[in-house]
Length: 102
Image 1: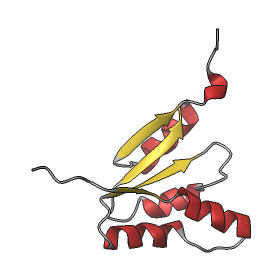
Image 2: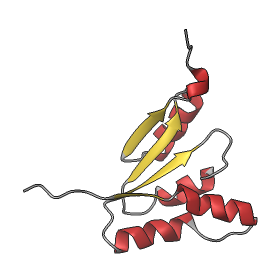
Image 3: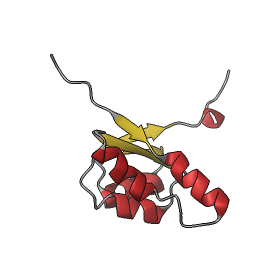
Image 4: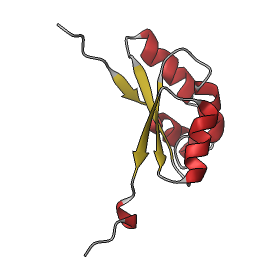
């Protein structure tokens, strides 16, 4: 039987950090903790407004062993960031505000 893989979304670790205006909790430490406890990957969403994960978080997370699933907006700027950081997986997120409802 094929093993089910576990991915852990650590976006809101960064949300709490940003709301506090502090350097903690750390998304990097959260990723390492997830990996230590059996996670196969971590998911982060680098939003255009950077309200969760920031570029420096992505840079740090890209250097660790656990695979990254990077969620990004579907535009060239964000795709270039993904190419520069080389995550294992990329999920393109289409904003519903950009859909043409007819």
